[in-house]
Length: 295
Image (tube, rainbow, N blue to C red; front, side, top):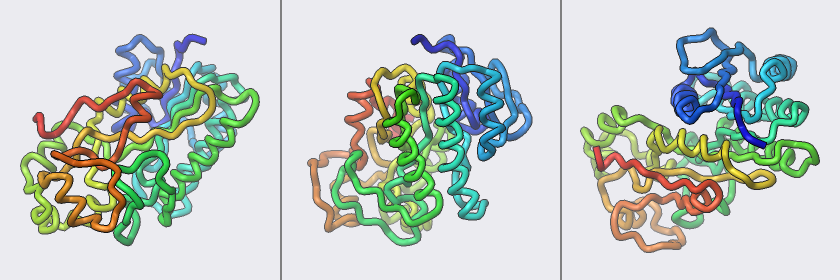
């Protein structure tokens, strides 16, 4: 089945706007399903919808009859909403989207999961991964509402992937922090990104718990498009990451200082990422192209 019409939920957000623009550039008809009013996003069509309301999701998608759905419309961080709302936004909206997609015969769904599904960025304590670099076999052990919601999202997708008549291809993209070039320049290039500098800036807890990872927004939206175009059966979760860390200290030194007891599964000679993206390369033909060091 060829894909012509793509619904992007949360298309008025940072990643959503960029995803709509990229999909438009590749000839797709796009529909933004968002909870607010239209704000000049680059979609071809717009539907206002509360994504935690099943009837609203069903009605909105039914009027569009999409070939694919990219579900980005979730609370992006747990900082400004109560935990139950954050969890509901991730878990229940995903169920509503997948159930409606099954009812409508949608072939492909792409979901915004997160590195936080493993228990990462918003954990109150410092994490200690069992091995590095991590891959999709890493245990998922979140304790915060955001991470639990992302883990639940993937469990829901697993279930739909086992159903007869459900979307044929479901991809959960595990995003790290997705950022544009201007933010990279301010946060990385113009700051002291050695370990002592990160500590002095008060960023160590967050950077440690996200494995000093990031992802350029152009690489993120290219992964979304490739997931829409992917051809496999069932549900697959995929880690994404830039090719390097956000740290000026070489990766081997970062591991020795920050994760001294970890099982090393690779040798580090430079600033290599601590997140392996081989599965994304194999499944989606995706590799990261952008590094902040090239700015």
